[in-house]
Length: 594
Image: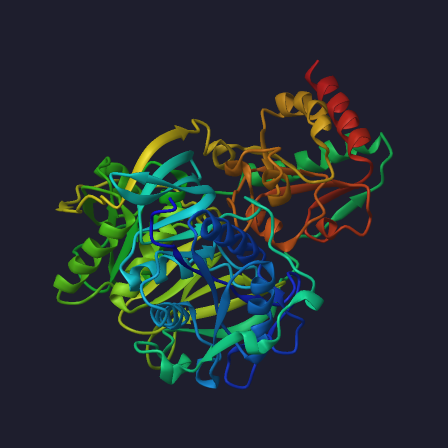
């Protein structure tokens, strides 16, 4: 490795307000965070750690890069204190309020000012916006392969060239991949130690180079952002909690309340999926799916069909080879069958297909897996379209001028309504937050083949699939386990799980600690589920977790703290020690079964 040229590494970092902050809109309808405290994004701290490790291993140089107002220089000063060699601060009033596409253009241009980078490192997402798009967008703009989220990464020689070898965190598997350099990677949270340095150890701001918009060829002003924020509002209380104390007799009362709610569920009919159009005309809604038989694909196609019928349009599904009758029943009117699912090549093929049409797609929708996010982030760059990412709901709204596609997503402890402008609106959606309509009568639909080239720059070396990776999405009863339940306490939950025929889910803290698999994580950075019963045990109730169970019919919360936020977002709350409550519930259910 010593004989190789030193690695040139750029690490992208972001300054964000504290996790639970609630931003507002300024007079120009931009999210205003200037009055809030600021810190380095949690995912970016891991990215800095990995960049410095790789820089030292490759005898290279690490440059930290950020875009933000003048005070954002602090995240670069901290990155330098942690071991980065220098910093680039993109700061210009014309960039205030930039969306992810404009931000990616500016960051890619800043990276280019330093010459060709061998590696660009980013955090998986951000705590204030949950876009997960900057990494793959930057990769597309730089013409590079992208891999992520990375759990572990290193360098090795292969065929006389230096390559990356990384372990990736997938929803359905753990993969080991090899990638050619140069490349872009994103780093999973809690995959390594967080880079932190006390302010007294930061270098002075003069250690950082500032770049204006005029110094960034190819960058754009924020006014060119194809997405815009319509409103920011607090999360509405959607449930009416009934709270009980920790008296053992309350376990029976909890079961009675669950039964009462279940009876109402059994008589509620599933929403009907609208019939398909008589002909393929009007606006085209493209639904990109990677797993055609999944519940998420059904929900996404149902949402696409609902939009299409309101606009007298039709739905084209793009996915791997699948049962066309199944796709038709789920909401598809036509199909594109792609020959390879590599995100980089697939985005290119989809963009070429869209350009070949008389009219581009009115909207492109997909789920929120790592694959979905990369495909649509790259596609947004190629179509120069507005990407609304990690949405929890989707709707259309008629105005005097046009029809808007509006998505809702978390921003801090609030929710933001956003829309996209331009020829094509692009959105990744947490499909577990969408209604699941009843299938419609299937009919014959045509399909065309979309040729997608192989991706030689990224090679899968080893893949360990999880056969039950979607079990938590299919389960009628889910037991959510929080940080309040220690690892040694899991055995006490097993009998309750067996009696309820339930699946385990977990908060991010639990999966990050390795006590549950990543595919069991529920929340804005994990899965969104809609079980009949969600039993939250030892969960404090962060907004990002509870948004993942917003469509659960009944949420029962068990926590010893009467002030835990979870009691504001449940249907039935039991204020009790989790062990006492679980034992009482287990006994009560077992007695019923005798």
